[in-house]
Image (cartoon, rainbow, N blue to C red; front, side, top):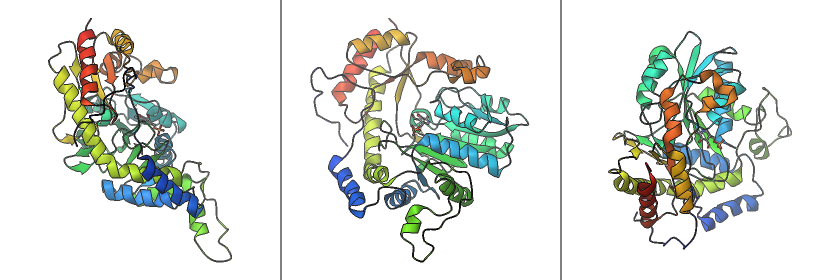
Length: 387
Ligand SMILES: Cc1ncc(COP(=O)(O)O)c(C=O)c1O
């Protein structure tokens, strides 16, 4: 794919994210839902799950209303099925969106923070140093689409008999040694919110390795009911209305309108991620010789989804203000979660993540940007970084 040649309309601010929808194709897919009279669970959600399994090669996939729901279901299912106790420990990162860590608390488990490495992902040595008798799992976040040292963490989890949960919110389309990510973990959760690489409006996918857990996730995401409404609507017999409630479940399932959008977006995911990588490589070239700007190292074995392009500077807040004055609106991913009251027990334990959280800037990265936009943003960064 070549760079977009659309000039940026004069005076239009450059936002951090801007979702791209193939409007007519999405509307055609959505029209099918309206015509069939089916917008809920089933129908397009099943089609999208099948398409996602084919695309990723993962054995199971269940479509949800969000990836936060998927993270919660992961801890809920693993805790109940593996007999974890309240207060059992989950090793996690402070450098993430709070959903990752809130999901641990929802299940009355204890987040134990480990530090990150130069890829902004969990550092295996730090993780190992945090393991105790009560550690049950590690949750790994592929920040920005990066795999970091995921393989080493997976190996550590195997050796120590810990479960691995992959928060793959940024990783739709990330490949590691040619294979889509996800199979390294016991469960992987992808995010399809409006600002992610496969934007719907709000939805996510939970992919368990184990078929039994996948089938439990299906029931739990629909209130614990054993038979979903689509299965009942498409079945026959006097008892087609009847169902059993096996668990106290949640209303977490995805719907056919979101799945319809997802089916269209999935067709373009590789192409879109390829374009993101081109933009990133342009940023890299423009900024590599700019002394005050630190870049996150590329990993040769990882074809990243490139959800973010992050840089590190010492004067982060001034740089953000200067960019805003130039109509450029960057972001910062993420604030050290141990600064929030419910995670303050981890304060001071992860100096690398804390420093990163004070230095990181995410510069705009989306499909509406042209090469010229990236050059313009880079020149502003070069001008103001380190000032
Ligand atoms: C790393 C990470 N985990 C989880 C989530 C939660 O995703 P959702 O909005 O689908 O619940 C996000 C969303 O921003 C995220 O970036």
